[in-house]
Length: 193
Image (cartoon, one colour):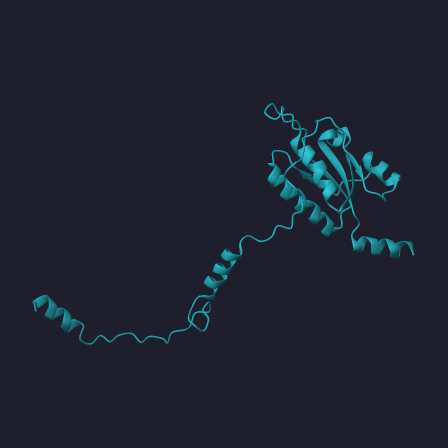
């Protein structure tokens, strides 16, 4: 040994190792010592993506003329209620603007929007789909308008819809009447009984 090594060992002769705490088992492991989150991730990967609850179709929808007036009324909706909707006499409690969205994104957003409005008990909403008249879209006509017309008819929550008045977007927007929630029906029964 060299002189430096001897001097080092002399200086370190009274040093004692630190005491170690006992080891604690990690909380993500099961009895066999494997990480349980790893097993869950593997199971999720094998299962594939979660089932999409969205019932709206994407294929086979025809674009519409930008100036075409849309209207739809389910059986059982009173003519007076539909007339007030058509005239814009119900205040829109919420609105969704689909401008600049792709068909896939608009499909997802519209489904979520109607679902959220139902949960909140909203009755009348404004859906802005646009006219699709930008120079790049002029040849395609109004794709989102055709999609909105098709999709709203597919949703049971939608009772009626009509193209909006000019100040609310004209033929580029829709007034949408939604089904009453069970709570609102109960409130009306209590109010009028």
